[in-house]
Length: 197
Image 1 (spheres, rainbow, N blue to C red):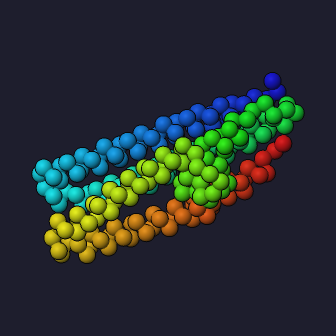
Image 2 (image 1 turned 120 degrees about the vertical axis):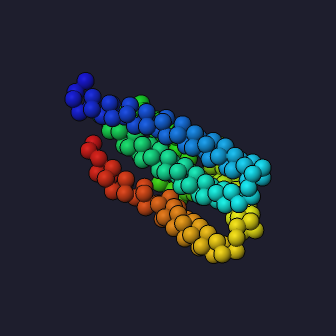
């Protein structure tokens, strides 16, 4: 195998390892956030209701962390797709089709999405799981905010609500720009579109 092809194949194996790792990390972080969120509810009910104020914080951090995991998954998929294209062009045959399978089965690249839930083109099981976890996370967040407002001392409410509103708005705006409007993937395409053939 010629050196350029060998390097491409090694990089492809590395990117496929990254996609597997970030799939696992995504679901690990979802489970962790869910367990910690339920734990906060239990501890708040049993010991001190004011501890419920931590629930929206954990929900927001969990959402941002899983979106971070998905951003690396998307990064690895883009690079793997380019490497597959390079190998296929060199072999003059479409032997490697994992990127096409992932687009059809998991979620498509290069389309607006809510992290990994495509906003058009049909629902996949991966998208459904993303939607389900998002609904639970938003539920934790909203319930936590309402209960925190009811249980925290009045003088803390303005500060707590202000900080949470600022953090939430910042996260939503950045996520919208990165995923929905596609800035993250556009940055990858700006480099990978010029990938050598």
